[in-house]
Length: 411
Image 1 (tube, one colour):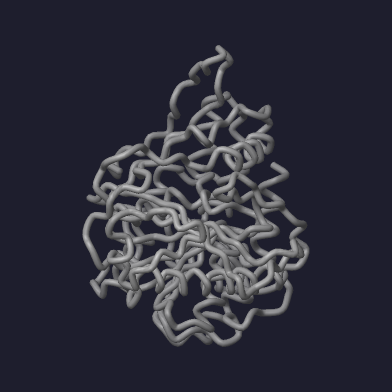
Image 2: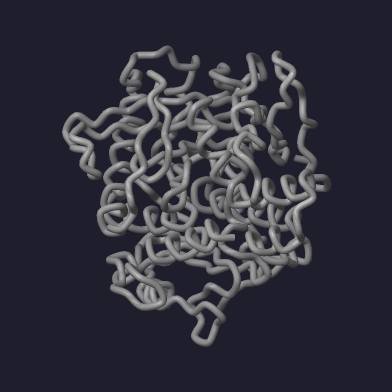
């Protein structure tokens, strides 16, 4: 469990379907053209919303900013846009081919598997690649991953929100994790020993993405290569209703970006601390000052602002004290940090396929029921953005629900 422990520490230091049947089995091993058995392909939980979805990648280049990790080049980003779509065209892969090998082998290695035993490149999402957009003027939600992790690790949540009528934009932060660019090159990964630089870079990345989304909504094509975009993509963006959520350091990024950029009107933090060092460390500006717009804190394993909690977070306590906008703190006491990323569905499936010991799953995810955890997280995230971006009352946010016993309200 070395990798998860490291990410648990890094995340805290840095930060941060038919509902009745989530499919936990993956597709069977299949032979390649050479007759060699291919790696195991995951099956993502089915989205719960009424809309089929599409996705497209954008390559964004910030000519005004140098890469913060010393590459000597200007800052380049890869983002994916997920949206309600007409169900035409091929299904999009979980990850681009070259990055997929690195990302799959990272998880596989942590689980004790051999290289190639997981196949992300041939794992299919529920989205159709570059499908025409269905409808117009939809709320927009940005997603930032955990420190050192890829944007693909939020796909479970992202697909579900898109199926409920949101345009969701997932952001990679090159330097932290392998990122594949359109020319086939893959970014280098640097040692993440400067958390402040990482958070500053992430905030700048997010604001740059917001700028490019404004270009897209104005009828321009922000893709650096000028690749054709799906019909209707720009018209689908209602940027007056833009929110953001993130996992671990991604949640930290959401709060810090909201502090300096009013284009974000609501934010959610999935188990990321808001200080530089945990449990002791300097508080971030968002923790010291709070925000004047809605914000959700969602923690695991007793991570809470409440004194005496198993994982009391001083930054959450300070944020809650200074927060001026609507706020709510939820918890999944039986879950761990990894329960808020795609590990929640991938690790149980891989463990079952390869007959791994039970403590592999509990080490990543805790003892929370994986299917129930996914249903609950999806429900509360959707309720939060429905309330804050669509202005519709959401009783689910008022008190604990017997439908989701995994979740507590931390008062």
